[in-house]
Image 1: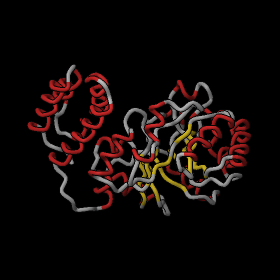
Image 2: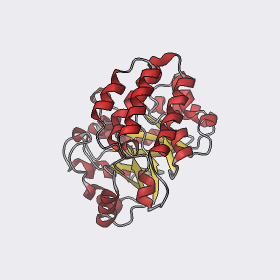
Image 3: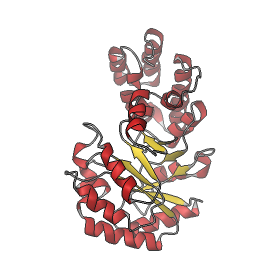
Image 4: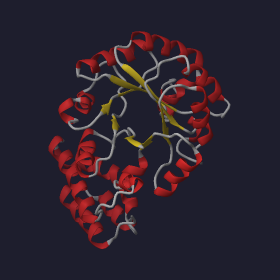
Length: 310
């Protein structure tokens, strides 16, 4: 099984990816949070710089519903040495979908078909796609698959939920099986793989899954891939603390002032806090911290007084 780290805006930055690759590894492909503009910002450029992603296979992700935008970004990415890009047709956020981008593009299949026709004809790079299975009804998936089967998709990553479901409810694994039946392209499963039990349920219920994309499960439990692979390695608070400190130092080094670093670390703790037994009061202290020194005191207390769940 190949495991991919899902792109999560504000979380899976190059600093996080570097630290994860050093301390845990096991990821076949990393994906950048989406790039949406022809005029790539300094922040977006830092995410895709080869020197910031050494030792990793990185696939830049593009969010676009205009072929000229997608192609312009692709040309820039080729200049940085990339040979593959990923099209985001999976983001369920209302601010994105309202403009028919991300999963919202699935609501206008004729426009999507025309868009795909142009980018697959003109793009100088291979194109993979990350998709939802529809907007609001499961029957939409059949029509979406009819569109996808027209194109030489390098890989189709399927989040087996509708856009309206966001990250709630059970994934519709049968949609992945439908794709296996009608598409002759590599497929990757995405959706709620967050424990050995959920992984076993996936492999028991679907034959022939060769790759999985995982996001929240890894952010909550960085050792998840080792658990899924059955790797008997030492995982303890010391290892997690070293990983945490590497990320925190990376942000502090690249950002000016405590505030920006604290914002990034607090965002991470929304997920990482779930690795501990009783984190609530410590997470409140972390959230209240206004300086890195007060933040460190709160983090020290959490690591000292609580245990890992895993």
